[in-house]
Length: 575
Ligand SMILES: Cc1ncc(C[n+]2csc(CCOP(=O)(O)OP(=O)(O)O)c2C)c(N)n1
Image 1 (cartoon, helix red, strand yellow):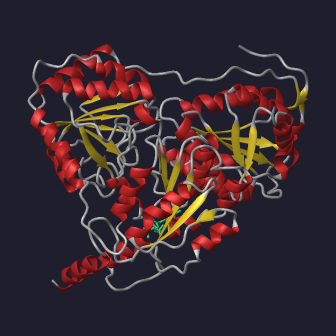
Image 2 (tube, rainbow, N blue to C red):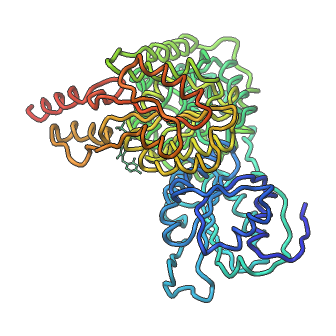
Image 3 (cartoon, helix red, strand yellow):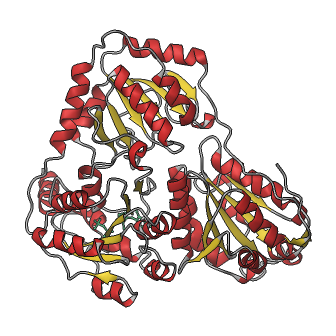
């Protein structure tokens, strides 16, 4: 349905178009390049809010998190060159993570184009599909009357096939031009469905398999699709692993769950992947982190048979030549798989049970003193609701969450993992603030490294200014301070033992910092025993809360120490 409209500035028409798409919140940093759009947000302030952030990196991450959490395009507004440059990290993250998102950039006036006017950049060059890592599409709107067409296309492109980010460039004079352009109806993705013969082929490959393994991930999963996925796994008794940072697609407590296929993979699961005779990948794009650096599945033709189900046709056969490629959305693939009739008995029931037993055994930590991160995760899980949203950025600290936290699964809890498969530091805090603003009645826990946290620490202010952590759900950020860019230190010790360069950090008092922004903060936590009381107080604070953990840098992963890595490297270099 199209609503005809009276004449108003294109900036207002733009905001009306976003409301028609179902948007109630956008994130951004204002700029004089899009004043008419800001005025549109003022005009329609009862129906849509503009969350003013403190850095466009924070804003674009918040929009990316919005896309992950809601399945609708996350929305971000930034100004020309400086704003767009700062926002790039969220666009790259949305691209690698296949998250629907639209970045709106105010542009210089059309009459000044190509003069390198103040802050002018050509965004088609900067973000265009040719970069192979930023936007799926960049559109520039020169005619106010065509604005609805561009917005509708932006939503279609962001949502369809392999979802991802789109950039829409808005010259300031266009935004100020009066238009009676109509408001177009909400866009929903056109869903690809599996061809019947592909399902027959999949069924016969499965029925002939000895050691099948399913890997699920990617975006586009709904609760209904996850429900169907669970039925497929149960009927066929299949072991299911979750791709890197898509751990909430399958209930980690389910007896068919085999663990996460990402950085720090359970060595037993890695061995099982190598040993499988059939991999059925449903949704993930089989990137470097999910394939063990392309070594667990070796391209272009993996030793294991590969069935790849993906919503984007271009993704099929891009790296791996699959034995069977199925171009389908998760919404259509999952019920079709659930309807496939299994044989009366399967040969791999013991294999599936062993995969889950390996996962359970991997949940048992090696005790560490004085602060045991595995116990920190256990204490969090014991005290937060099942639908809690967990966010993190990049760094070794996230390994404890990925290994020990049991994601309840989207089917039970909605999306509960907001984490960058792109490995982008600084994501976790803005993602947590966005999640708390969008779903105020769900508890949000952000686990951050000291390096990771301060990349977007300024968004502590956004949380307070816009009332995050004030619903019935708490907002808690837990900073793991090891005085180091620990991940890089780990790689250094492995390659250049003892030669620490550029990876030490001098840190502030994180609790004092948080308090200065109006957050509640606990005393610094140095021991396992002190953590749970601090967490309980944080959860009850009634406002955003921060817990500052002090971890010895030597405790570098849940499996090894810096000293052991250095010893091994020295021995290797001597040999
Ligand atoms: C934006 C960005 N910059 C740099 C890197 C490279 N990098 C990956 S992990 C890491 C260190 C993370 O440090 P911290 O957050 O303190 O966590 P730790 O590894 O110590 O647990 C760095 C610098 C990155 N992934 N993202």
